[in-house]
Image 1: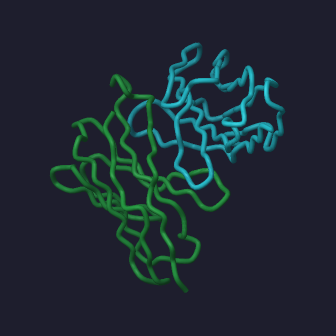
Image 2: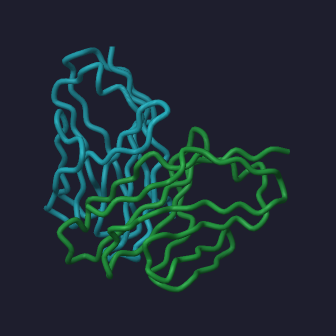
Length: 113
Length: 114
């Protein structure tokens, strides 16, 4: 099993450009989420999804949009990138329920110039 | 959202046990306690989780207070590879209003000395 796969691993954008970060899981998990992690900081929840076709806002949703058209994929979009969005982005997935343990991807390093 | 409180940092010597505390005084009856760790330049990885009873697995043990307002992650013999940031989080059941909103906080930076 590949687990949780994030693409790309690295990306450099100019201010105002748009892009989509992709997350795919092959574990048939209902729950998926996106986090960002700034240097020396903890993880902050951007958006999450408890099932196909549903999404919800996390702690820091502004400037991001998400879509969950297929159960195995959770896309994070930046419509107009800003330098403040320079960060490492992690995708995570799990089975439903409070016992479901999170599986994380290896991260996407995004720099916005 | 239920919150957790952890010390910013802790230190240990190699081969010694490490007890990482976590306070979660607002925990509800159906919240599970999860622990994750993040090695340098990697994504977080699952360590252990529990509800009421103490739990053991190959990585660590989890001791949960009787009133469930605190828990302790125990690494029985720390190695240099255990140096990481350790996060304690609470996870609601699927019917909870904050079920999907898993917040991580700052975690505890564990330094292991040779």
